[in-house]
Each structure stands twice: as structure tokens, then as C-alpha cells.
Image (tube, rainbow, N blue to C red; front, side):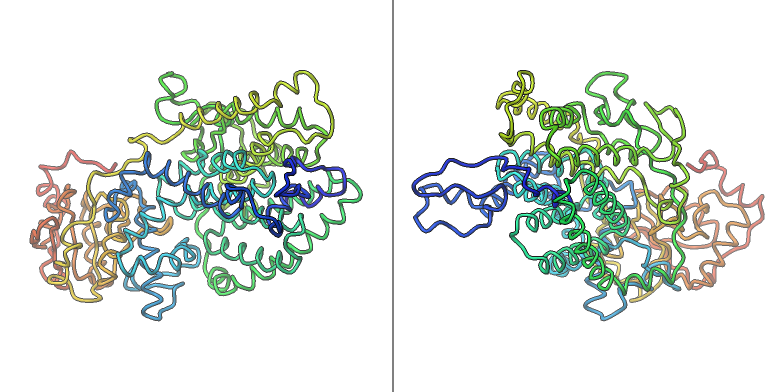
Length: 630
């Protein structure tokens, strides 16, 4: 994908360790990393040069830094649901992890569920339930519950993504420290930060794209055969398909673009390898699509979700830090946030942009540098979307804006292309820090930037900018205690609810119904649940109950119809977020019982429900009539 055309005889090894009596010189960059060990014994610390040992060491460094600082509150309380509980996304992924364990152990169709949107149920064909993570974490989910599994996966997402990028950078350069820096650029990028603090497992688990790069570079070096590349790449693509369909679609488009760009920059002798790589990746796609056939069949048989708003990157996000507060500078506090909330996840920073410029200027004869630079520019332009915004202000519409209305493209967020942009930046950083190729003597200013001090001084600036963009405690939005009530965690619900009963959950916690249901091991079925645009994004309420806090006779009748037609047996109200709900249920004719931290309303088929006039509703709601929809 990235460097198959870079082996036509022109490109020389980026480095070549000094030969010793115990260790012969390595034959080429990357290829020696997996060569047979020398016959003579290694030096005392020679085992540290093993790629496997260095990979373990890199992961240990990433995990130690991340888990001992930013994510320490999470790993200290793995049993608490505390990540971004105001958003519906984290609790949906808790549900997704629990669902796959439930589906496996109960032998039910994992792509359709009757447990949410009860009693009819819903297809999960267009829903990202992260099956690869659900299957991998099934032992943890079954033993300790889906909340613990979710917290562990969230805590490990960034270190694992950084480690995967380290493998690609280490294979490309053969150097540990440049690869360690490159892995950090990718795994701890602003893109990863933004999605991990939002609890979006499908996006923050970005392990597979760099693994695919790693496989291609190994194939280029002759370390794996054509057959192995096809099989392993096909498996990687299939897993990515199941992990998140949009990233798979982006990867497909970027692979096509990368191969075309590779043909453009390759010399005549290397173009054959690019074409061969294209054919092998095409075969890998056939394997991936064959493995994804069950999911594809369900997906294509159901309607696609509604088109989301264009998540476009603000151009200013490329160079400005985008954490709240703007490091104390007033105009920075808003400059990089752009037209969509995802735009801050695209912050690259001036130091990384300088890395690209310096690499292009000092290695302008290298075809891989042409390739990386050109691909990054194209991806950054694509991430801007159909309309270019700068500092939140609309500037102009791009000439190719009609491409964003195509059937597949219109359901994707352009900003998510920056995942691959950060992967390119990681590779570029590793290449720059690995030092000059030695093909020619650099000029005076180029030698200054190519010096050890110049390269690692720039790396220090990259680290400094990254530290500025690390999520603050406020951005993490972790709750000091779990949002799962004792009514659920203690099993008290079994005394009030029948097994398989249809239940509605009322809480200000995002997707509390899915969270409580998953933590109860799916003891009851849920009316509602936010899984897509079909339900209220804040509460996951079924349509007939969304506006009930501001009652009218027609809304009360709609809710009564919901109880009767959907066989709603009970309503659980979080006592910490009661709001106007108890008053509404009271005038409606339902009686609640406070059980610990949950108010339980058993509907009894709406036998006590009352029909009210508008005047009666208004009179009953006068004490809370000042409340309006938020």
C-alpha cells in the first residue's frame, strides 16, 4: 500500500548498523528485522535488538504513560460506568459488548435483537456493535460484566493503536526510538484522544490500518510471500469491516488512491511491483468480502440510516491546539472547533506540519517521501468536506463538492479521513528521525535539520504540542461514581420485574436503558434505546414518550397507546434525575414505589390510566410549568 514501489534499486537502506565480530551487517532496512539470528552468540544486551522484545517494550511504555496519568481514574475503578455518561455512545458500546456474549451463550442471531425497541426488536445491520471486540472480550464480559470489559478496552485502545503504528514504523525504519515516536504520533493523536474520551470503541480502536501497512512493508522486504500477504490482509480487512463499516469504506478508497499515487511516483522498474501489490490486495478484498457476507446480507436487506450532517474539518484545526481553554490564549479557545464537533479531533499542530515540510525538503529525491507527502495533502483536503471553513467561518465551496452527495460518501464524516492522515504523519516522523539515507551529501541548512539535534529538537516540539492537546479532567467528563444504580447492580430488579418484561428507563444519563439492561445480563427487554437516529439522542426514549415531560392530552394518549400496544410492563425512573416525570406519571394515574435509588412504576396494562383535558393537565403541571424542552 505504501512502499511496494520503493524497491526498484534506487532507494538505499536508511541505516546500516556497524558490523561487529558477533553480528554481521544487516542486508537492508526492515528486512533484517526478521532474518535468521547469527550463528555466533549475541552481545550481552543483544536481545534488546529483537523486534519482538522492542515491540513489547514499546507497548509497555505507551501503556505505562497513558494508564498512570490520563486514564488512571478509569483503571482505578474498572467496575464503574463513568466515561462520558452524558452521551449515548459509551453505554451503547457497553451494551454491544454484553450483547455479543449474550448472543453466543444463548444461540440467537447476533444481527437482530428483540431486547431493544421491544417488543418488535430491530436489525443490527447498520449498527456498529463492534463484534470483533465483543468476541475478544467475551471471557471478561461473562466473568466480570460488560462495564469492566468496556473500561478495559477503552483504557487499552490508545496504547494498542500506538503499538500497531510502532510495528509499521519499526519495520519501515529499523530503528526503535524513531518508531516509538512515530507510534505515539498516531496512537496519541488528537483524533484518538477525542474518540476515546467519547467512549467510541469503533473509532478509538485504530489498530488495523497500521497493521495492514506493516504487512505490506514486510511483503516488500520479502519477509512474507504473496499468499501470506493475501490471507493476512484479507483477515485484517474483514475484521475492520465488522469493527466499523465506515472506516472499512474509507480504507478502500484510500487504498485505491494510494495505489494510483504509487504508480505516479514510482520509477519504471517499480511499477510492476505496484501492479502486483494491487492484484494481491484485490484478492485480499475478495477474502474480506466473503467473510463479511453474513453481515452484508443483513445490511443490504435493511434501510440505511438517515444521512448525518457533514462532519467537516475546520482548516484552522490543522495547526491550532483544540483543547478547551486554548492554553490560556482567548482566541485559541474557539479557533479550531470548526463547523462540527468532530473537527477538533483533526488538530495536527505546527510541529508535525514542520516535520512534513522538512522531510520533503531534505529528502526530495526519495519517492516514498513524495508518496507520503502527496497522500497526506489529498487526505487533508478531503477531510475539509464540501465547504471550507477557517476559524469557524465559511469561506468557499470546493469544486468537487458533488462527490460528497454520492450514496456511500454522503453517509460518512470527512473528518474521519484524518485517522489515515495521522498514520502518514507517524510514518513521516519515524523516517525523519531515523536520519538521512546517505544517498547524497545534504546542503548546509538541510544538514542542520538532518542533524541529531535538529531532528530530535523538532520531535520535542511535537511532544510539547501533544501534551497541550491531552484531554483535561473536564474533557474526560468521568463521573466520580458509577451511574448504574444499586437497584440494578444488587439484583433488586428481579423482585419487581418479570423475566423478559418490556421496561422503559427514564434517566438523564445517556442511554441509561441500554447500560442498565446490559448490567442486568439482559433480564428484561427495553422499550427504546438509542442505536441510531431513530430515537432521541439524549435519553433513548421511545417516540411515544420523548415529549411526555411537557404533557398535552394528545401526548398522554400517545403514551397510553405505547403502554397498551407495546405491552410496557414497568417504568424505571432514576431517582437522581426525576425531573417532572413523577408528576406526569402521577396525573396519568400511575403509582410509583421508591426502591433505593430507582422509582418503579408498574403499569398493569394501563388499568389505572386517566384521560385528562388540557385544563386538567395544565392545572396539575403548574408547579413545574416553567420547564421547557432543552
